[in-house]
Length: 356
Image (cartoon, rainbow, N blue to C red; front, top):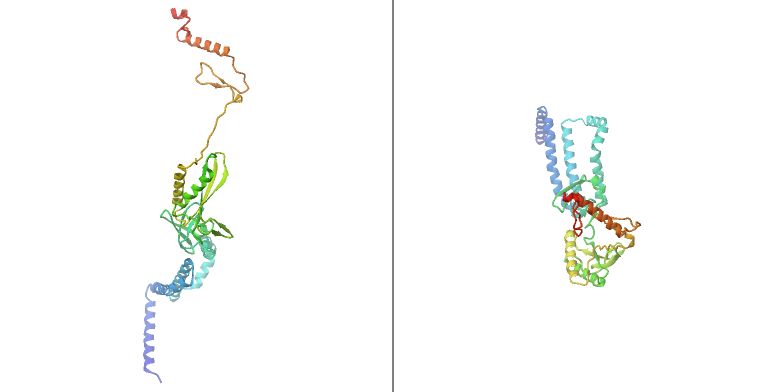
């Protein structure tokens, strides 16, 4: 016994199958099938991302890992839809596998950097050297905030208001300093050189007070623990070294946030300069004393020369009579050269050349 409803459904199915076969015979039908499959995959991927986005963000503490999972779901859905479309269009995957086997060496060379970045991206996500929002500093001095971490690259928003995109393969080879991973408090130091005659205890007290007057500097509180060690939270100035030109005092202080280290250091330096200016403390600078003794040599002066000529330290000093004779003979020669006039005005006579 055949039901009318079953007959109607079978008729509709047969008509749809006939319509599909007619569409398949049209030129470009395979391409349209692939495009339609990809479009459906994109819509489905967006729906899945909205569906699992919040649960994944709540379950995964790290933002970079959560974003990687969501991106993987999106890319996987679209790739699956593409494969379905290719299969519906009659694409032979055996040919693709055969071509990939033939050109595997060339593809491996071309894709080696990309594959390396993918692998290093997985290591970065697993090792957790930094996270989105952390302030980091590269080995070349570039500082900024981590804006995004993907499988292929890491995007840094620098303090100079520029974006820096670094491949993960290069990122893992660099020395990266994370300034805000666990604790944003950062310790800095400033060296101040004062003279030996200065009041050192007063200088240390004033330098510590100068640092405490800055709002961005931690002025006290419980000790700050780093590993098994504990450090004073407030500014601490100590006598560091007896230098050649003075006593070197080193100030160490903690900054609350690592975002404006240069400005904080400038403010502390300004406060130190103003406080030491009115105290019995003098900042040291290099002094040099030149001492001349018997081993320094003897200056020998020639009347006809423009500059003195230094004699050797072991050379005997010239006799005064010799210097006088030399000077007189040189002067006489100069006078003869100027027309024969005797250079001595007391003699009162003029040479024959002059009279003539």
